[in-house]
Length: 444
Image 1 (cartoon, rainbow, N blue to C red):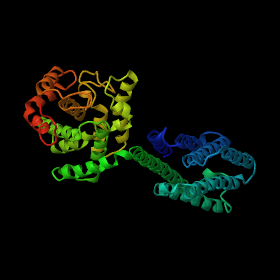
Image 2: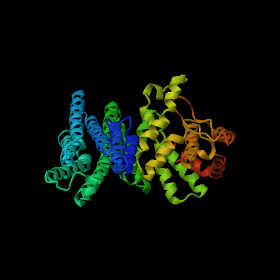
Image 3: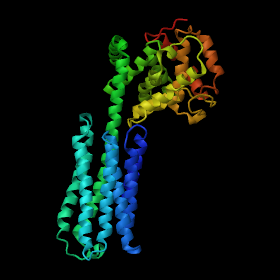
Image 4: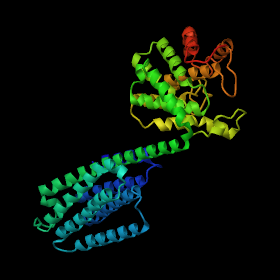
């Protein structure tokens, strides 16, 4: 069970490392706790004093790391706390060693160990109740309950230990209540691991909210345009049932904000979606896939929200550093979307990452080739390039239809999936009808 909790702690650490404080200490805490539990479990096979002293010392260190991690998470840590914990641990370890030499030392060791664990549970509960920011309270409930329950179990054990009369050999006592307590403690520590996962989720959620606020502050001049585009979006939703949900509205708005910042054609993302629908249907993809693709495709350039305006809209040649920064929009978009388990956002994350990969492996950012690139990524790559060439941009005029189609044929098997190019030309009339419709601005 302890090993399972260590695995949960590893998962939590991987999910929030580098972004949430305290995770390293939580991970180390379960590591030391696992070592301590192993030493206690194998007491029959090693000298008892090694099991008692080193096993409980490892557990004390593990619980201390848990508290230190919680303090870092809540931004309450200072160096004096480490000194207090070192003194507290030294006192308890010294007591454990001294009590080994007393005839009825087990009783007092049980009291000492129980009081240590009471401190762990009470301190964790108090920190979560008194020091957690209000915005995090809904995410701290589970961890608070398990810390509090942990303290309550050991308060009960402390009181019970004062009347211990089953001798000085804990294993030989076969006390069923003690066994139940230890089982509950292990379960509660598992609950603490789950609580930590929820705390990480809460902090990451707040970070996203704060990021959204900062973006809002730095893009106040876009407010009127966003309102205007929201109105257009709602009008489009009346003829597009796939965009009926709130999630789809938010994604579409974000995509259009990116397009507005880069001064590209306002309805670029809508056209890319329609081209993607035509090609996916031409491939014979099932309706659920097509629906997800159409809704996810507008998010392909979400990462451009992190690119400065002076680089995003530069009309001259880019420097090498500027080109690398622009290319980084694929990873930015992917990282913004990747943490969701929803199928729509997962596909949008994949498209954001892969829509500049090329069939011959010369694209970016991962240098994937062939079918290593996902089907949605390959489809949006073709549609995005076609639309970029077919409409006017601040830095270029639209290409003629013949020029575009010649270029796409030339890049079949190089930039583009050969099979998708065949489908593209098979349905070229439908595709051109989209760009010549009210969604387009193409008249050459």
